[in-house]
Image 1 (cartoon, rainbow, N blue to C red):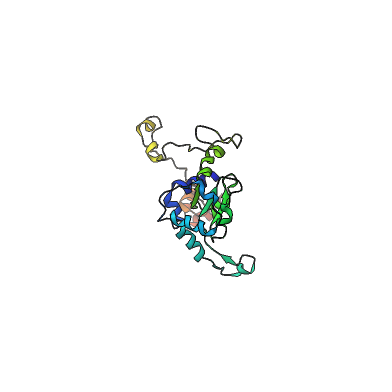
Image 2 (image 1 turned 60 degrees about the vertical axis):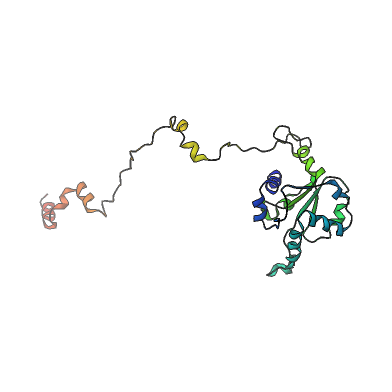
Length: 226
């Protein structure tokens, strides 16, 4: 599930937009910045980086959405709600950018080896806007592997593949190759006989007892005689 969340946030731009992120000014996805961003210590410098790469509107959206929760939830230790902003993923242990970005509302920071599904897909919705540093992005192949090489960190882990090469199932079924092998359609529809209740259906009762066709007076006369 982690690799699916990473792929959804990196490949499908419309999925990130559908999740509500303001990425109209972002030049490309996946968004990778140089490792010099990991040495940033001040929040003011971190804001400049966000403005340069076009991610500042998304952080502003998260800041402006901070509000009191409606309903009784605000009495149960979850008083405030706010939208999610960008997630900054770094690759160097002890990087200084954690202190620079933690003061910006809505912006979260995570190490590439400790990615959390709750951060990659909050609420179970894929398409989180992620900002990668160069070292973090290069470590993805080492951690999760590729389709050609297995993972070096996770023993026996292989990236999931789609079982179907062509997802158009109707086209496969209706193709000449498949239709020439399968059995023809059965046009005869055999229905089970409908069993009717003789006590409720007079015609069925007459088939069982033809004497009921006689008037009631004749039946009583025959009984007295017999």
